[in-house]
Amino acid sequence: MSFSRIARSITPSATLALNARAARMRAAGEPVIHLGGGEPEGLAPPSAIEAGIAMLRTGQVRYTPATGTPAMKDAIIAYTERFYGRRPGRDNVMASAGAKQAIMVALLALVDPGDEVVFPVPYWVSYPDMTRLAGGVPVPVRPADGSFQPSLRDMEEALTLRTRAVLLNSPNNPSGAVYDEEFVRGMVRLCEERDIHLLMDDIYHRMVFDGNAAVNCYACTGRELDEARIVVLNGVSKQYAMTGFRIGWAVGPAALIRAMGNIQSHLSGNPSALSQHAAVAAVADERDSVRELCTHLERHRNVMMELLAGIPGLGVNVPGGTFYGLCDFSRFDADSHRLSEHLLEKVQVVTVPGVEFGMEGHLRLSFCGPLSEVREGVRRIAWLLDPHGPAELEAGGRVFRR
Ligand code: PMP
Ligand code: GLU
Image (cartoon, rainbow, N blue to C red; front, side):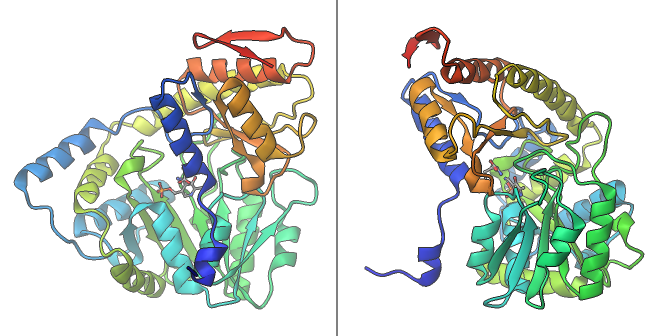
């Protein structure tokens, strides 16, 4: 059997594969600790659930316009006005089946075979494969100083005549780094000068700690939405704990949104009517559940980082946002897949290998789960990595041996 070049060039999403593996182990009764997760542990807002149930009861769950219902578009418009200070028109916004699909249709609308898409390292796991799916060439840019803050100069050097898009994700998955204003402002200017689209993956933009805030890209340009080269990607997955609803969105120049909508109309048609209805209720909910989520996550971050700092030889980088940290484990094993597998096998702790994000020698640890799991996960890791520790560890009703 032979498959297409695209099928052969794409690898499965490592994060989703690990989620599935952790779920299988749990179902089999294993005392697994999941520090590889990518979703808040809380429930979707009651307003969203109620809206979904009410709609289901009507039995009127039909096709909607491919780019979303008028109510969904108005919710995206209101959200953008509230958090970015810009009021887009309905033709500047579209809903998708998750931010993932919004990013994908943006790339399909911008990239021709051989065109380049530039993004800083570490990058979200799907960017290289999404770029390849669109026929493009991924160009990861590694900060020369080894930090998680990309430099404007490194990024500028990576831009060529083939660059069609730059992808930025701040706060960043997997590092939790929040890019500073000078950098974002500089990228907006560079992309405007060179007519390159800047895709701002803002899915964690309200999950920032220590009283800080993510940079508002629209505050970095004097241009109107249709003239700016900015596309903002977001959704309800993370901020409203609605990952399984699969609702994301894009805000951008009307001409590009139209092209993206055309592609989506053939790809999946509309995002789920039911989920759009629930998402509208979540976005309109005045109760600030995101602030609560943030306070909760900040506490988890503090606990995890403090415990990790107690492991000699581990390189800890304190995340400024999201619910992930990317730590340097290279003193223990430079091969992140091997180390991640070792942790899973020996102490049943799920982590994500850093190489999936372009950072070999690192592991991504999530602190979105219960605090007891955060503590227990780090306790098991610390035991396994300590060459002078006891030969056995009791955990989850089991005795682990080296
Ligand atoms: N971007 C980043 C950086 C992410 O971590 C995720 C994770 N799910 C997504 C986009 C996609 O989110 P979704 O499709 O669930 O809206
Ligand atoms: N974005 C999350 C993560 O990075 C969820 C998994 C995925 O969509 O790939 O873990």
